[in-house]
Length: 253
Ligand code: SF4
Image 1 (cartoon, rainbow, N blue to C red):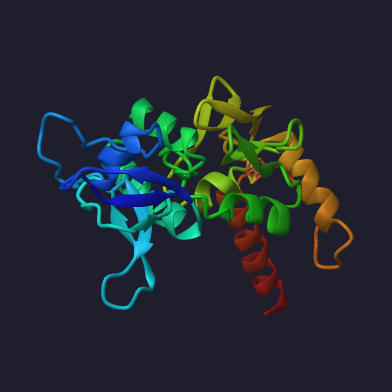
Image 2 (cartoon, rainbow, N blue to C red):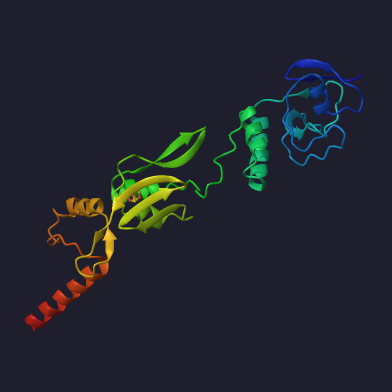
């Protein structure tokens, strides 16, 4: 009858038992999804990683407890950095296949494994946060931990409705909805900003939010090349400036 240690406690095993069977028989917790006591183990979910000394070198390696047969004097660790790394990898692989599985998420939490953010279309590149802070200026987006996971979230009241974040988002998870003279910027179901839209004085098209126009005016008015503020959309502004230029060229000829 072999004796093994699990996390420095000694247990008696029966010949042919697996580490998982000994652990379960003695109330030692090891996570599993693909294991069933009435079926042959397959090692498919890979959640039951434990650390043991390697046979050839004695150097500690991770192995799957459901298929690892006990040996006299075997020293098993069910905790530690190597085990955590192996389990995190396994949880992430499983969540790629079953992202909405509550069972997997709850199991990960129970074993203190961070499975990473749930799939919500956001790849956490932070381009939206960076562009809003570094280029546009208001800093209306931030990274926030919710339930132990990182999410892009709005900073209340700071959005000016420019839509730059939506334009730069590589996965289109930030939405811009221009409807009934109102622009709504949102991520997931969360509103980042809701703003009235101004009409272009040239063509009448709804084209920008007052907060954005005000922001641009404040940021650029001190510059010597900036002309008087106008309320023209990009197309009309270009059209008028082309006309002014050709008129000036004509006068100068
Ligand atoms: S729409 Fe709002 S959150 Fe997005 S870049 Fe502009 S100010 Fe920032």
